[in-house]
Amino acid sequence: MTTVKTIQTIPKGRTPMPQQDAVVRAKNFDEVALGYALENALREADRCIECKKPRCIAGCPVGIDIPGFIRAIARQDMRKAYEVLRQDNPLPAVCGRVCPQETQCEIRCVVGVKAEPVCIGRLERFAADYAMAHFEPEMLSITPTGKKAAIIGSGPAGIACAADLARAGLDVTIFEALHMAGGVLKYGIPEFRLPKAIVDRELDLLKQMGVKIELNTVIGKLFTIPQLMKDKGFDVAFIGTGAGFPRFQGIPGENMNGVYSANEFLTRVNLMRGFRHPEYDTPVGMGRRVAVIGSGNTAMDCARCALRMGAEKVSVVYRRTQKESPARAEELHHAMEEGIEFQWLTNPVRILGNSDGWATGMECIRMILGDPDASGRRAPVEQPGTNFEIPADTIIYALGTRANPIIAKSTPGLKANQWGYIEVDERTGMTSIPGVFAGGDIVTGAATVILALGAGRRAAKGALEYLGISPAGRPAETAAAKA
Ligand code: FAD
Ligand code: SF4
Image 1 (spheres, protein in one colour):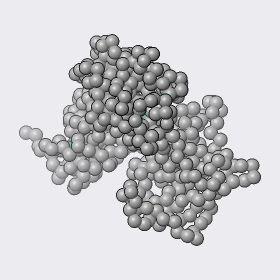
Image 2: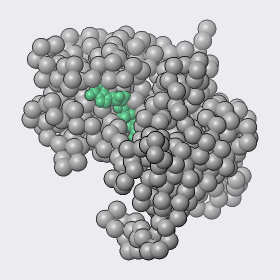
Image 3: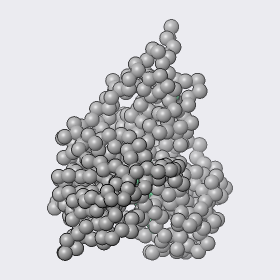
Protein backbone atom coordinates (compact mmCIF):
# COMPACT_ATOMS: atom_id res chain seq x y z
CA MET A 1 0.00 0.00 0.00
CA THR A 2 1.41 3.42 -0.93
CA THR A 3 1.36 6.10 1.77
CA VAL A 4 -0.13 9.43 0.74
CA LYS A 5 2.40 12.24 1.03
CA THR A 6 1.31 15.34 2.92
CA ILE A 7 3.11 18.47 4.12
CA GLN A 8 3.33 16.73 7.52
CA THR A 9 5.07 13.63 6.17
CA ILE A 10 7.73 15.24 3.94
CA PRO A 11 11.03 16.83 5.06
CA LYS A 12 10.34 20.50 5.88
CA GLY A 13 13.64 21.88 4.62
CA ARG A 14 14.77 22.18 1.00
CA THR A 15 17.64 20.03 -0.22
CA PRO A 16 20.62 22.41 -0.29
CA MET A 17 22.33 23.15 -3.61
CA PRO A 18 26.00 22.15 -3.55
CA GLN A 19 28.05 25.23 -4.42
CA GLN A 20 31.60 26.52 -4.64
CA ASP A 21 32.94 28.11 -1.47
CA ALA A 22 32.47 31.92 -1.59
CA VAL A 23 36.17 32.75 -1.06
CA VAL A 24 37.32 30.32 -3.76
CA ARG A 25 34.66 31.20 -6.33
CA ALA A 26 35.23 34.96 -6.02
CA LYS A 27 38.49 34.33 -7.89
CA ASN A 28 37.26 32.09 -10.71
CA PHE A 29 34.62 32.07 -13.44
CA ASP A 30 33.52 28.46 -12.85
CA GLU A 31 29.87 27.80 -12.13
CA VAL A 32 28.86 28.79 -8.57
CA ALA A 33 25.97 26.34 -8.10
CA LEU A 34 27.19 22.83 -8.81
CA GLY A 35 23.85 21.10 -9.40
CA TYR A 36 22.10 18.26 -7.61
CA ALA A 37 23.51 14.75 -7.60
CA LEU A 38 20.94 11.98 -8.15
CA GLU A 39 20.36 11.42 -4.42
CA ASN A 40 19.75 15.17 -3.84
CA ALA A 41 17.27 15.25 -6.72
CA LEU A 42 15.39 12.15 -5.51
CA ARG A 43 15.12 13.59 -1.99
CA GLU A 44 13.82 16.93 -3.26
CA ALA A 45 11.45 15.36 -5.82
CA ASP A 46 9.97 13.36 -2.95
CA ARG A 47 9.01 16.63 -1.22
CA CYS A 48 6.45 17.38 -3.97
CA ILE A 49 3.08 16.20 -2.69
CA GLU A 50 1.64 16.02 -6.23
CA CYS A 51 -1.27 18.35 -5.52
CA LYS A 52 -4.62 17.67 -7.18
CA LYS A 53 -4.72 21.39 -8.04
CA PRO A 54 -1.05 22.28 -8.54
CA ARG A 55 -0.77 26.00 -7.95
CA CYS A 56 2.86 25.99 -9.12
CA ILE A 57 1.82 25.56 -12.78
CA ALA A 58 -0.12 28.83 -12.75
CA GLY A 59 3.05 30.58 -11.57
CA CYS A 60 5.10 29.36 -14.54
CA PRO A 61 4.90 31.82 -17.47
CA VAL A 62 4.98 28.92 -19.98
CA GLY A 63 2.77 26.54 -17.96
CA ILE A 64 5.21 23.62 -17.50
CA ASP A 65 3.58 20.46 -16.07
CA ILE A 66 5.65 20.82 -12.91
CA PRO A 67 4.25 17.90 -10.87
CA GLY A 68 4.51 15.79 -14.05
CA PHE A 69 8.25 16.26 -14.46
CA ILE A 70 8.94 16.04 -10.72
CA ARG A 71 6.96 12.77 -10.52
CA ALA A 72 9.06 11.38 -13.38
CA ILE A 73 12.28 12.28 -11.49
CA ALA A 74 10.92 10.62 -8.33
CA ARG A 75 10.29 7.47 -10.39
CA GLN A 76 13.77 7.76 -11.87
CA ASP A 77 12.37 8.09 -15.38
CA MET A 78 14.69 10.92 -16.39
CA ARG A 79 13.88 10.71 -20.09
CA LYS A 80 10.23 11.32 -19.32
CA ALA A 81 11.11 14.19 -16.95
CA TYR A 82 13.08 15.88 -19.73
CA GLU A 83 10.35 15.30 -22.32
CA VAL A 84 7.70 16.81 -20.04
CA LEU A 85 9.90 19.87 -19.54
CA ARG A 86 10.67 20.29 -23.24
CA GLN A 87 7.04 20.19 -24.21
CA ASP A 88 6.67 23.71 -22.84
CA ASN A 89 10.21 24.99 -22.46
CA PRO A 90 12.83 24.68 -25.22
CA LEU A 91 15.65 25.72 -22.85
CA PRO A 92 15.18 23.89 -19.52
CA ALA A 93 18.91 23.77 -18.69
CA VAL A 94 19.04 27.55 -19.07
CA CYS A 95 15.82 28.29 -17.17
CA GLY A 96 16.70 25.84 -14.39
CA ARG A 97 19.70 28.10 -13.76
CA VAL A 98 18.46 31.65 -14.31
CA CYS A 99 14.66 31.79 -13.91
CA PRO A 100 13.39 33.77 -10.90
CA GLN A 101 11.49 30.72 -9.57
CA GLU A 102 11.20 32.29 -6.13
CA THR A 103 8.73 34.84 -7.52
CA GLN A 104 7.06 32.55 -10.06
CA CYS A 105 6.35 28.83 -9.51
CA GLU A 106 8.00 28.33 -6.11
CA ILE A 107 6.19 31.18 -4.40
CA ARG A 108 2.91 29.43 -5.23
CA CYS A 109 4.01 25.94 -4.16
CA VAL A 110 1.52 24.58 -1.62
CA VAL A 111 4.34 23.11 0.47
CA GLY A 112 5.57 26.67 1.01
CA VAL A 113 2.55 27.46 3.19
CA LYS A 114 3.83 25.37 6.11
CA ALA A 115 7.39 24.46 5.09
CA GLU A 116 9.97 25.51 2.51
CA PRO A 117 8.63 25.30 -1.06
CA VAL A 118 9.83 22.53 -3.37
CA CYS A 119 13.01 23.51 -5.27
CA ILE A 120 11.36 23.40 -8.69
CA GLY A 121 14.18 25.27 -10.46
CA ARG A 122 16.92 23.04 -9.08
CA LEU A 123 14.97 19.96 -10.18
CA GLU A 124 14.44 21.45 -13.65
CA ARG A 125 18.18 22.01 -13.95
CA PHE A 126 18.87 18.46 -12.72
CA ALA A 127 16.53 16.85 -15.29
CA ALA A 128 17.97 18.91 -18.16
CA ASP A 129 21.61 18.32 -17.16
CA TYR A 130 20.93 14.60 -16.70
CA ALA A 131 19.45 14.40 -20.20
CA MET A 132 22.45 16.23 -21.65
CA ALA A 133 24.87 13.86 -19.97
CA HIS A 134 23.05 10.59 -20.66
CA PHE A 135 20.80 10.93 -23.71
CA GLU A 136 21.32 11.92 -27.28
CA PRO A 137 18.76 14.02 -29.14
CA GLU A 138 16.92 11.99 -31.72
CA MET A 139 15.87 14.09 -34.69
CA LEU A 140 12.38 13.41 -35.94
CA SER A 141 11.80 13.81 -39.66
CA ILE A 142 10.56 17.27 -40.62
CA THR A 143 8.32 17.72 -43.64
CA PRO A 144 9.41 20.84 -45.57
CA THR A 145 6.63 23.33 -46.32
CA GLY A 146 8.56 25.41 -48.86
CA LYS A 147 8.09 28.51 -46.69
CA LYS A 148 10.96 30.66 -45.39
CA ALA A 149 11.26 32.45 -42.04
CA ALA A 150 13.76 35.16 -41.07
CA ILE A 151 14.50 35.46 -37.34
CA ILE A 152 16.22 38.68 -36.32
CA GLY A 153 18.19 38.21 -33.11
CA SER A 154 19.45 34.96 -31.57
CA GLY A 155 18.43 35.50 -27.93
CA PRO A 156 15.91 33.26 -26.17
CA ALA A 157 12.94 34.78 -28.06
CA GLY A 158 14.60 34.13 -31.44
CA ILE A 159 15.78 30.65 -30.46
CA ALA A 160 12.30 29.59 -29.29
CA CYS A 161 10.59 30.99 -32.37
CA ALA A 162 13.18 29.42 -34.73
CA ALA A 163 12.84 25.99 -33.06
CA ASP A 164 9.04 25.89 -33.39
CA LEU A 165 9.07 27.12 -37.00
CA ALA A 166 11.81 24.69 -38.06
CA ARG A 167 9.93 21.84 -36.41
CA ALA A 168 6.84 22.77 -38.44
CA GLY A 169 8.85 22.50 -41.68
CA LEU A 170 9.90 26.10 -42.40
CA ASP A 171 13.28 26.95 -43.85
CA VAL A 172 14.60 29.17 -41.01
CA THR A 173 17.52 31.62 -41.00
CA ILE A 174 18.55 33.53 -37.88
CA PHE A 175 20.31 36.87 -38.47
CA GLU A 176 22.50 37.96 -35.55
CA ALA A 177 24.31 41.29 -35.25
CA LEU A 178 27.12 39.98 -33.02
CA HIS A 179 29.81 37.46 -33.91
CA MET A 180 28.28 34.87 -31.58
CA ALA A 181 24.72 33.62 -31.23
CA GLY A 182 22.75 33.44 -27.96
CA GLY A 183 21.85 37.05 -27.10
CA VAL A 184 22.04 37.96 -23.42
CA LEU A 185 22.54 34.29 -22.57
CA LYS A 186 25.98 34.64 -24.19
CA TYR A 187 27.04 38.26 -23.87
CA GLY A 188 25.26 39.22 -20.65
CA ILE A 189 24.88 36.41 -18.13
CA PRO A 190 28.37 35.36 -17.01
CA GLU A 191 29.89 31.90 -17.22
CA PHE A 192 29.70 31.41 -13.43
CA ARG A 193 25.88 31.57 -13.60
CA LEU A 194 25.27 30.06 -17.03
CA PRO A 195 28.11 28.16 -18.73
CA LYS A 196 28.30 29.02 -22.43
CA ALA A 197 28.48 25.29 -23.29
CA ILE A 198 24.85 24.93 -22.19
CA VAL A 199 23.72 27.62 -24.64
CA ASP A 200 25.94 26.18 -27.41
CA ARG A 201 24.30 22.81 -27.02
CA GLU A 202 20.87 24.34 -27.54
CA LEU A 203 22.14 26.23 -30.59
CA ASP A 204 23.62 22.98 -31.97
CA LEU A 205 20.20 21.34 -31.66
CA LEU A 206 18.74 24.19 -33.70
CA LYS A 207 21.39 23.74 -36.39
CA GLN A 208 20.71 19.99 -36.48
CA MET A 209 17.10 20.87 -37.25
CA GLY A 210 18.34 22.76 -40.31
CA VAL A 211 18.25 26.30 -38.86
CA LYS A 212 20.93 28.51 -40.45
CA ILE A 213 22.60 31.22 -38.34
CA GLU A 214 24.15 34.24 -40.09
CA LEU A 215 26.41 36.11 -37.68
CA ASN A 216 27.76 39.67 -37.97
CA THR A 217 24.55 40.69 -39.76
CA VAL A 218 22.85 43.81 -38.45
CA ILE A 219 19.34 43.93 -39.87
CA GLY A 220 18.40 47.52 -40.56
CA LYS A 221 21.96 48.25 -41.72
CA LEU A 222 23.01 45.36 -44.02
CA PHE A 223 19.44 44.52 -45.14
CA THR A 224 16.12 45.88 -43.99
CA ILE A 225 13.07 43.81 -43.14
CA PRO A 226 11.26 44.93 -46.34
CA GLN A 227 14.31 43.73 -48.31
CA LEU A 228 14.28 40.37 -46.52
CA MET A 229 10.61 39.91 -47.39
CA LYS A 230 10.59 41.29 -50.94
CA ASP A 231 14.07 40.59 -52.35
CA LYS A 232 15.18 37.55 -50.35
CA GLY A 233 11.88 35.71 -50.45
CA PHE A 234 11.14 35.31 -46.74
CA ASP A 235 7.45 34.62 -46.12
CA VAL A 236 7.50 35.65 -42.46
CA ALA A 237 9.90 37.49 -40.17
CA PHE A 238 10.28 37.54 -36.38
CA ILE A 239 11.94 40.46 -34.58
CA GLY A 240 13.64 39.33 -31.35
CA THR A 241 16.28 42.03 -31.05
CA GLY A 242 16.06 42.54 -27.28
CA ALA A 243 16.51 45.81 -25.45
CA GLY A 244 20.25 46.24 -25.30
CA PHE A 245 20.60 50.02 -25.64
CA PRO A 246 22.38 51.36 -22.54
CA ARG A 247 20.85 53.88 -20.13
CA PHE A 248 22.81 56.54 -18.22
CA GLN A 249 21.76 59.10 -15.60
CA GLY A 250 22.78 62.21 -17.50
CA ILE A 251 24.95 63.57 -14.65
CA PRO A 252 28.26 65.46 -15.15
CA GLY A 253 31.34 63.34 -15.82
CA GLU A 254 29.70 60.32 -17.48
CA ASN A 255 31.95 60.74 -20.53
CA MET A 256 35.13 60.14 -18.47
CA ASN A 257 37.42 57.23 -19.29
CA GLY A 258 36.68 54.32 -17.00
CA VAL A 259 32.89 54.79 -17.16
CA TYR A 260 31.20 51.81 -18.82
CA SER A 261 27.68 50.73 -19.64
CA ALA A 262 26.93 47.29 -18.19
CA ASN A 263 26.48 45.92 -21.70
CA GLU A 264 29.90 47.05 -22.85
CA PHE A 265 31.58 45.75 -19.71
CA LEU A 266 29.81 42.39 -19.79
CA THR A 267 30.32 41.97 -23.54
CA ARG A 268 34.04 42.54 -23.11
CA VAL A 269 34.22 40.10 -20.23
CA ASN A 270 31.85 37.38 -21.46
CA LEU A 271 31.67 37.43 -25.22
CA MET A 272 35.21 38.53 -25.95
CA ARG A 273 36.63 36.45 -23.11
CA GLY A 274 38.24 39.56 -21.59
CA PHE A 275 38.72 37.64 -18.38
CA ARG A 276 41.36 35.61 -20.20
CA HIS A 277 43.29 38.61 -21.61
CA PRO A 278 46.06 38.55 -22.92
CA GLU A 279 45.29 34.98 -24.12
CA TYR A 280 42.24 36.61 -25.77
CA ASP A 281 42.58 39.98 -27.54
CA THR A 282 40.08 42.19 -25.71
CA PRO A 283 41.33 44.01 -22.62
CA VAL A 284 38.77 45.08 -20.03
CA GLY A 285 40.94 47.86 -18.62
CA MET A 286 39.43 47.68 -15.16
CA GLY A 287 40.69 49.49 -12.11
CA ARG A 288 41.21 48.35 -8.52
CA ARG A 289 38.11 50.04 -7.11
CA VAL A 290 34.87 49.45 -8.97
CA ALA A 291 31.45 51.04 -8.41
CA VAL A 292 28.34 49.58 -10.02
CA ILE A 293 25.24 51.78 -10.26
CA GLY A 294 21.96 49.84 -10.01
CA SER A 295 20.89 46.68 -8.19
CA GLY A 296 19.25 44.34 -10.70
CA ASN A 297 20.59 41.04 -12.06
CA THR A 298 22.76 42.96 -14.51
CA ALA A 299 24.35 44.97 -11.69
CA MET A 300 25.05 41.78 -9.70
CA ASP A 301 26.65 40.22 -12.79
CA CYS A 302 28.87 43.27 -13.33
CA ALA A 303 29.91 43.45 -9.68
CA ARG A 304 30.69 39.76 -9.44
CA CYS A 305 32.60 39.79 -12.76
CA ALA A 306 34.65 42.78 -11.55
CA LEU A 307 35.53 40.89 -8.37
CA ARG A 308 36.64 37.87 -10.39
CA MET A 309 38.70 40.14 -12.67
CA GLY A 310 40.78 41.12 -9.61
CA ALA A 311 39.11 44.29 -8.27
CA GLU A 312 40.11 44.95 -4.66
CA LYS A 313 36.84 46.61 -3.73
CA VAL A 314 33.50 46.48 -5.50
CA SER A 315 30.58 48.66 -4.33
CA VAL A 316 27.01 48.47 -5.55
CA VAL A 317 25.23 51.81 -5.29
CA TYR A 318 21.41 51.80 -5.30
CA ARG A 319 18.97 54.61 -4.56
CA ARG A 320 16.40 52.38 -2.84
CA THR A 321 16.85 49.61 -0.24
CA GLN A 322 17.61 45.90 -0.49
CA LYS A 323 13.87 45.23 -0.28
CA GLU A 324 13.21 47.08 -3.57
CA SER A 325 16.26 45.62 -5.34
CA PRO A 326 15.10 43.95 -8.57
CA ALA A 327 17.89 41.31 -8.50
CA ARG A 328 17.01 37.69 -7.81
CA ALA A 329 17.31 36.94 -4.08
CA GLU A 330 19.86 34.20 -4.81
CA GLU A 331 22.09 36.54 -6.82
CA LEU A 332 22.04 39.21 -4.10
CA HIS A 333 22.84 36.59 -1.50
CA HIS A 334 25.74 35.21 -3.57
CA ALA A 335 27.11 38.71 -4.20
CA MET A 336 27.04 39.50 -0.47
CA GLU A 337 28.70 36.19 0.39
CA GLU A 338 31.49 37.01 -2.07
CA GLY A 339 32.25 40.33 -0.37
CA ILE A 340 30.54 42.92 -2.60
CA GLU A 341 29.75 46.07 -0.60
CA PHE A 342 26.24 47.55 -0.88
CA GLN A 343 25.52 51.27 -0.52
CA TRP A 344 21.72 51.32 -0.21
CA LEU A 345 19.72 54.58 -0.37
CA THR A 346 22.54 56.24 -2.28
CA ASN A 347 22.52 58.06 -5.61
CA PRO A 348 25.45 59.42 -7.65
CA VAL A 349 25.18 63.12 -8.52
CA ARG A 350 28.54 63.63 -10.29
CA ILE A 351 31.37 61.49 -11.64
CA LEU A 352 34.72 62.77 -10.41
CA GLY A 353 37.87 62.60 -12.52
CA ASN A 354 41.48 63.71 -12.92
CA SER A 355 42.98 66.17 -15.42
CA ASP A 356 43.69 63.31 -17.88
CA GLY A 357 39.98 62.59 -18.13
CA TRP A 358 39.97 59.35 -16.10
CA ALA A 359 37.30 58.69 -13.48
CA THR A 360 38.49 58.74 -9.88
CA GLY A 361 35.19 58.36 -8.05
CA MET A 362 31.62 59.54 -7.61
CA GLU A 363 30.00 62.24 -5.51
CA CYS A 364 26.86 60.64 -4.05
CA ILE A 365 23.93 61.74 -1.93
CA ARG A 366 21.93 59.75 0.60
CA MET A 367 18.25 59.14 -0.08
CA ILE A 368 15.12 58.33 1.93
CA LEU A 369 12.02 56.56 0.64
CA GLY A 370 8.96 58.73 0.08
CA ASP A 371 5.49 57.88 -1.29
CA PRO A 372 5.01 55.18 -3.96
CA ASP A 373 5.72 56.31 -7.55
CA ALA A 374 4.23 55.10 -10.87
CA SER A 375 6.06 51.76 -10.49
CA GLY A 376 4.27 51.18 -7.17
CA ARG A 377 7.58 51.28 -5.28
CA ARG A 378 8.34 54.01 -2.74
CA ALA A 379 10.13 56.82 -4.54
CA PRO A 380 13.65 57.72 -3.39
CA VAL A 381 14.04 61.34 -2.26
CA GLU A 382 17.38 63.15 -1.81
CA GLN A 383 18.43 64.13 1.73
CA PRO A 384 20.06 67.58 1.36
CA GLY A 385 23.50 67.99 2.90
CA THR A 386 24.40 64.28 2.92
CA ASN A 387 26.80 64.37 -0.04
CA PHE A 388 29.90 62.14 0.19
CA GLU A 389 32.46 60.59 -2.17
CA ILE A 390 33.07 57.00 -3.19
CA PRO A 391 36.53 56.49 -4.74
CA ALA A 392 36.39 54.36 -7.92
CA ASP A 393 38.56 53.93 -11.04
CA THR A 394 35.89 52.00 -12.91
CA ILE A 395 32.22 52.96 -12.82
CA ILE A 396 29.64 50.69 -14.43
CA TYR A 397 26.11 51.81 -15.27
CA ALA A 398 23.61 48.98 -14.79
CA LEU A 399 20.39 51.00 -14.71
CA GLY A 400 18.40 48.95 -17.19
CA THR A 401 18.30 49.25 -20.95
CA ARG A 402 16.20 50.65 -23.79
CA ALA A 403 15.07 49.48 -27.22
CA ASN A 404 17.60 49.83 -30.01
CA PRO A 405 15.86 52.04 -32.63
CA ILE A 406 17.56 50.53 -35.75
CA ILE A 407 14.77 48.15 -36.73
CA ALA A 408 11.89 50.55 -36.10
CA LYS A 409 13.66 53.32 -38.05
CA SER A 410 14.43 51.09 -41.05
CA THR A 411 11.01 49.43 -41.30
CA PRO A 412 8.29 51.75 -42.69
CA GLY A 413 4.87 51.03 -41.16
CA LEU A 414 6.22 49.21 -38.09
CA LYS A 415 4.39 50.59 -35.06
CA ALA A 416 6.38 51.17 -31.89
CA ASN A 417 5.35 52.91 -28.66
CA GLN A 418 6.87 56.13 -27.30
CA TRP A 419 9.83 54.21 -25.80
CA GLY A 420 10.59 52.41 -29.07
CA TYR A 421 9.16 49.01 -28.06
CA ILE A 422 7.36 47.28 -30.92
CA GLU A 423 3.58 46.94 -30.69
CA VAL A 424 2.16 43.46 -31.31
CA ASP A 425 -1.14 41.65 -31.22
CA GLU A 426 -1.15 39.93 -27.81
CA ARG A 427 -2.46 36.60 -29.08
CA THR A 428 -0.40 36.14 -32.25
CA GLY A 429 2.62 38.38 -31.72
CA MET A 430 2.01 39.97 -35.16
CA THR A 431 3.18 43.56 -35.59
CA SER A 432 1.44 46.28 -37.61
CA ILE A 433 2.99 44.70 -40.73
CA PRO A 434 1.28 41.49 -41.92
CA GLY A 435 3.71 38.55 -41.75
CA VAL A 436 6.14 40.36 -39.44
CA PHE A 437 6.08 39.19 -35.80
CA ALA A 438 7.96 40.32 -32.69
CA GLY A 439 8.54 39.18 -29.11
CA GLY A 440 10.83 39.26 -26.10
CA ASP A 441 12.46 42.36 -24.62
CA ILE A 442 11.95 44.41 -27.83
CA VAL A 443 8.20 44.23 -27.11
CA THR A 444 8.01 44.18 -23.31
CA GLY A 445 11.15 46.07 -22.35
CA ALA A 446 13.82 44.32 -20.26
CA ALA A 447 12.15 41.24 -18.73
CA THR A 448 13.15 37.61 -18.25
CA VAL A 449 14.42 34.65 -20.25
CA ILE A 450 11.25 32.62 -19.74
CA LEU A 451 8.99 35.48 -20.85
CA ALA A 452 11.12 35.93 -23.99
CA LEU A 453 10.89 32.18 -24.71
CA GLY A 454 7.13 32.26 -24.25
CA ALA A 455 6.81 35.26 -26.59
CA GLY A 456 8.96 33.55 -29.25
CA ARG A 457 6.74 30.47 -29.15
CA ARG A 458 3.54 32.51 -29.26
CA ALA A 459 4.81 34.36 -32.33
CA ALA A 460 5.80 31.08 -34.01
CA LYS A 461 2.23 29.86 -33.51
CA GLY A 462 0.94 33.17 -34.90
CA ALA A 463 3.25 32.89 -37.94
CA LEU A 464 2.08 29.34 -38.68
CA GLU A 465 -1.53 30.44 -38.38
CA TYR A 466 -0.78 33.34 -40.75
CA LEU A 467 0.74 30.90 -43.27
CA GLY A 468 -2.03 28.32 -42.79
CA ILE A 469 0.40 25.66 -41.54
CA SER A 470 -0.50 23.48 -38.56
CA PRO A 471 2.12 23.33 -35.78
CA ALA A 472 4.03 20.03 -35.49
CA GLY A 473 2.25 17.80 -33.00
CA ARG A 474 5.35 17.06 -30.96
CA PRO A 475 8.87 18.36 -30.63
CA ALA A 476 11.26 17.42 -33.46
CA GLU A 477 13.87 16.19 -31.08
CA THR A 478 13.17 13.90 -28.19
CA ALA A 479 15.61 12.41 -25.80
CA ALA A 480 16.60 8.89 -26.72
CA ALA A 481 18.95 6.85 -24.54
CA LYS A 482 22.46 6.35 -25.85
CA ALA A 483 22.86 2.84 -27.20
P1 FAD B 1 18.27 39.24 -26.19
O1 FAD B 1 18.66 38.12 -25.31
O2 FAD B 1 18.72 40.61 -25.85
O3 FAD B 1 18.76 38.89 -27.67
C1 FAD B 1 18.62 39.81 -28.73
C2 FAD B 1 19.63 39.48 -29.80
O4 FAD B 1 19.33 40.26 -30.96
C3 FAD B 1 21.06 39.82 -29.41
O5 FAD B 1 21.91 38.74 -29.69
C4 FAD B 1 21.39 41.03 -30.31
O6 FAD B 1 22.77 41.09 -30.65
C5 FAD B 1 20.53 40.76 -31.52
N1 FAD B 1 20.21 41.96 -32.30
C6 FAD B 1 19.86 43.18 -31.83
N2 FAD B 1 19.62 44.03 -32.85
C7 FAD B 1 19.84 43.32 -33.99
C8 FAD B 1 19.77 43.66 -35.38
N3 FAD B 1 19.43 44.88 -35.78
N4 FAD B 1 20.08 42.69 -36.29
C9 FAD B 1 20.44 41.43 -35.89
N5 FAD B 1 20.52 41.08 -34.59
C10 FAD B 1 20.22 42.01 -33.65
N6 FAD B 1 16.60 37.07 -17.09
C11 FAD B 1 16.31 36.01 -16.29
O7 FAD B 1 15.25 35.39 -16.46
N7 FAD B 1 17.17 35.61 -15.31
C12 FAD B 1 18.38 36.20 -15.13
O8 FAD B 1 19.13 35.80 -14.24
C13 FAD B 1 18.73 37.28 -15.97
N8 FAD B 1 19.93 37.89 -15.87
C14 FAD B 1 20.27 38.87 -16.75
C15 FAD B 1 21.55 39.40 -16.69
C16 FAD B 1 21.93 40.38 -17.59
C17 FAD B 1 23.33 40.92 -17.54
C18 FAD B 1 21.00 40.88 -18.55
C19 FAD B 1 21.40 41.96 -19.52
C20 FAD B 1 19.72 40.36 -18.61
C21 FAD B 1 19.36 39.34 -17.72
N9 FAD B 1 18.10 38.76 -17.78
C22 FAD B 1 17.79 37.70 -16.96
C23 FAD B 1 17.09 39.21 -18.77
C24 FAD B 1 17.05 38.26 -19.98
O9 FAD B 1 18.34 37.83 -20.32
C25 FAD B 1 16.36 38.93 -21.16
O10 FAD B 1 15.05 39.28 -20.73
C26 FAD B 1 16.28 38.01 -22.37
O11 FAD B 1 17.55 37.59 -22.79
C27 FAD B 1 15.55 38.69 -23.52
O12 FAD B 1 15.60 37.85 -24.64
P2 FAD B 1 15.45 38.40 -26.13
O13 FAD B 1 15.57 37.20 -27.02
O14 FAD B 1 14.25 39.25 -26.22
O15 FAD B 1 16.69 39.39 -26.35
FE1 SF4 C 1 4.43 19.88 -6.10
FE2 SF4 C 1 4.42 22.35 -4.94
FE3 SF4 C 1 3.45 22.02 -7.41
FE4 SF4 C 1 2.11 21.00 -5.33
S1 SF4 C 1 2.44 23.17 -5.75
S2 SF4 C 1 2.51 19.98 -7.30
S3 SF4 C 1 3.83 20.40 -4.00
S4 SF4 C 1 5.60 21.68 -6.74
